[in-house]
Image (cartoon, rainbow, N blue to C red):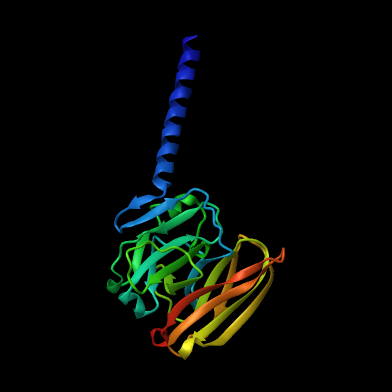
Length: 259
């Protein structure tokens, strides 16, 4: 009888230790304020979005860049000097929500260079994620207002460089990743903003029968286009016939920053 009681006690103690370890790991991965560097990072509850189109990533495109790994340190640099005259709101999250990873509310002096953080704090604990699974958007407020950014139909962004050890060297354009709320047929357009509110379409691509809630990738490979203000414009309709209100993202292009 005593041996049976000892066995039961051992099982109970072991279960308690495993449970404590599990709870501790869950707490480590929870979305919360972190330091060195200062940011919020972790797993968020299943997010609910009411937007027809969401921008998941906006970065410079380097065909030779390898993103199928997860380096010890991840870095985000800004691909335009315009950001130094405004407020930058960096958001990093999964392109496909599996773990519901998110990093935001970053406190960083962008004039000092790229922002970097350790993949060991959260990302390595999620199992199997690589840089290719992550989307990065640097939302930009030219007016530096104190109000938190809220998604709208006409946002400003700063395209970013996303890398581990070395910055991208063979940059040829921009890569945008978008998410549609439901199956749809959409057109993505890059337009140069001209005087008097006019625009000049430089690149356009049509995407038919795209599934909802999965990333759609759109590449503009023309880094030598003239410097100035540009727009990414997404329009179309859902499979049920409902029209998608045009989604507009503004950004500044500086070709002299590209190799």
